[in-house]
Length: 200
Image (cartoon, rainbow, N blue to C red; front, side):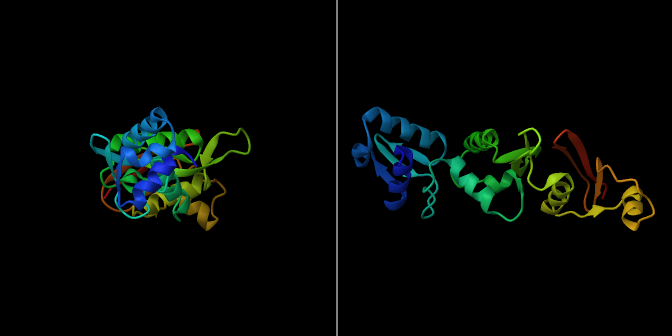
């Protein structure tokens, strides 16, 4: 077990508080200090005094993850919806910068993919080039984003004709009209750009 994970587990078991002396048996001074510094920068611990720390997230078991990125990874893999908004990753006493770094780490690992401003999707490897692609493909991702935003997709003439069988022309999906109050979102899915617009 890594030093960081051990510190996180101890913080959780001790009601969210730690002293430097509690950690002497985990490793040498430099290694423990580095682990503490990383946990503080990642928003999981808060330094409250000389050699004293407390859990930044106080719910029981919250610190059972190595890092904030592990917490977000577990959340991404657990949820039914493949779409996540930035607000889904707000945690008590955790800075926006810490969350940004954790999400960036998960993007580099291929767990999550940013497809729009504040919009992310679970990712998978493409069978063609090993690049990342949305887990639910192009059309599935558009539908999931609309649902996650609480909107319905309004059929345009081309989509309506294709769905009714009066046209063989497959809608490109590059422009999607949504129900509800005025809103505009631009998604980048693979090499395609999709404009989602609600006119109100």
